[in-house]
Length: 153
Image (cartoon, rainbow, N blue to C red; front, side, top):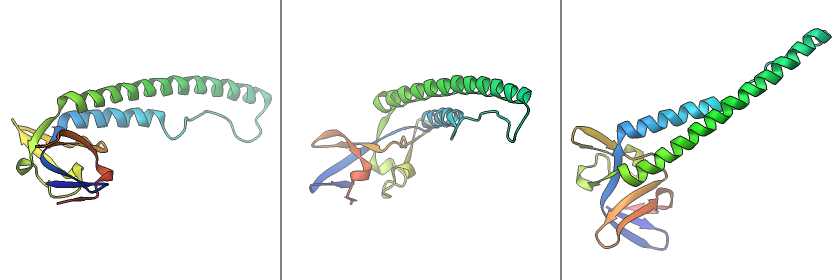
């Protein structure tokens, strides 16, 4: 595979780095749970309409407690996202393996998320990240931001 980068730079790829599908899936699941915990907006308990002073005071107390709990949940979700980021960086740095192009299914497609290969009974896939590690004969291992690829041949 030849990869054309901006500036008419061609990379002659011999292999592409893929990761165990189980590892990628576990990280994606953990990230999704943390994002869900953050939510599109914290839910706050309150009373609509014009309640009596007693109800208003209770609603205010519930809103404060709810806000506190939402803050705790957001902090926990943020900590979880930081752990996911660390795990992702570790996986990208140390856990991948290079596969010869001939052993990668769908490698002719320009979508890294469609690539897969088998090794020792384990399915390997692209990480889903915007970068692709490419092994070349003349330049060694090169990390390419796939969105910047102009063409593949």
